[in-house]
Length: 51
Length: 454
Ligand code: SF4
Ligand code: SF4
Image (tube, rainbow over all chains, first blue to last red; front, side, top):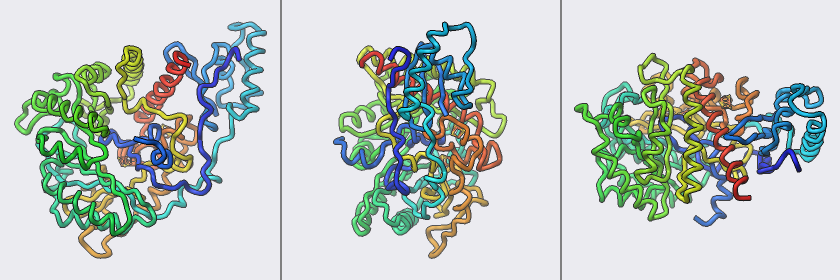
């Protein structure tokens, strides 16, 4: 394509029901830097990925 | 909904519904901008800027991507994801091991660790009951979190150690996995503590603001001395040990009205040798001299752009750093449910003080209206705020519903909304503006990288 290049097709995963809920909580306040959604990992991929 | 913006010299297009990210020509960007917030068919591009042929070919590509579900894709709505359905299961605990601190930082939200109350250290027994409380309320969740927070948690380190041991024993009885984390200012860090932390903590947050003069302006000892000279080297040595052990850490600074050129502080921390860095804006509901205000935004935005440039420089020099808020995983992010449900304060996350009192999160500690129980009293937990927090998700906030960033931000900080805007459902505007800017940079960096190394 001449005008548009797709960088990512996106993974706004449609979860059936509510997701597994096993991932990290995500405080967004300035005092914590624990984890915001944007840089959070899905627990399911975290398990599969060697660290 | 789509969001089109310029990052460095790249036109970035985020399709909110699908999460797809594209880069595009100026002609396509003009077309897309014209149709933001309205059905594409009605959009009229600015006249004269591009030839009719250019617009026609851009239009063709836009239509093709729209048909493929990668532009203007329908959003996952409230009907599919009902965040309110999550049960009252608690999976994360902020344990205030010390309501006391050996620093006196100007911008401290916790009143130098005291949280507007008496200075106190968490007794071991109270800590154990807090862990029991978490384990007992965690339902089917296997992965639990305990964050040792303060004040300064190293002032009560023997209790931290004993509680880690206690947690490790008890998690087996319940079939759980506890992840421990800790936040420290580093003053009391020594080799022995460092070794323990490296062995047992999943993540550690090290507080340091950056350049010596910036750090020392706000971060002082009890006697008013600057702290940089006391901690910088120790924190760095500790960070290096963690890197060597393959463990996560962040060095975390606060930027204020005094250092709106905070990219210089990130650069300083990177030059010292820290690889994982975060700096956070200091805001206040009071007219503090250090607090940032909406009028500062243009300068702050320009500074985030400078920071993004610096990140690219480091990457191209083969010495990448990780800036916390510029990390975004476009391929493997969390599920849609997680993205709309918010931080979990008052629903799945609570804070426990040295007195054993339970609050919806650390930011509420010490505010009597938000006390929701005590871990020392049997049956002493009645979460009167559950519904209010549970319903404070992106679909229930007007500002969030119309915001392109909602699936990345998940609705902002409840404590900020309440304190700054007086309403749980009205996100703090200044924080929103900063969050959106950081996300633009984060997504822009992904594009910039993709364009240089396809
Ligand atoms: S309310 Fe704010 S400070 Fe509390 S957990 Fe949520 S994001 Fe963090
Ligand atoms: S940036 Fe603000 S308006 Fe947008 S989703 Fe986050 S909290 Fe809501």
